[in-house]
Length: 305
Image (cartoon, rainbow, N blue to C red; front, top):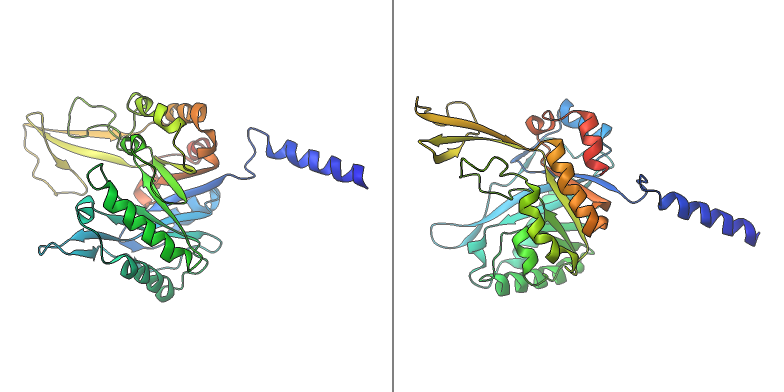
């Protein structure tokens, strides 16, 4: 009997250690919109790519004209999340909200919990905060995270946060897990920057910080593209829809998109330093337009670096 157990354990170990094994890998995506709705394109994507986790942006926290931090752009649920898909409520907070100690931490958590209840979202085990904090706002932001983590723990909810590349050189925030944002690595306002969304040469300088960054993390990669408008070489704006900007004869419209090759090059760099980040891969973001930019076979490669 004992020999049988040893053999079984050995087989389990062999399977779990296979390079291609998905035993512990999580396929996830961000949902970054003001309306949650599952159309046929999204449903097919969730099913074929075995998406088991959605980081859903619930709302932003911004400063109003009076300087008060308030919720903004709250999501509306037209459909319920797909069955079997875990929802991670995510809140984007502007950095200027962290210039003074927040007095609304408990209110923020209550709002998330109420939205869960109102929209029939159950089984929430994690919430995530997204903030482009800097060295100047670090102390206040970390204090906010510490308080939120304690409050969330009382509800048996873990706290995670996004980590931008430049933040790897700073102190580690008081959270349970981080998401390394591997997009927006270049300057999209520079017409000469051909890969502003993701470029391995922009990622490489930060790898030395990643290697010793003492925090469990996963990795987020981009599937979006930008149409950028330049006038006489100067940046005018991102074109989100038709007729958003008047386009003059002197203007230049450029398309910026991440190729599968570019994305895989960055994934290879991450694999060489912190391969466990790929135990959970998140794609940003799962709207219908973005999803159709790549073939199913390309998504397979993104989720299996």
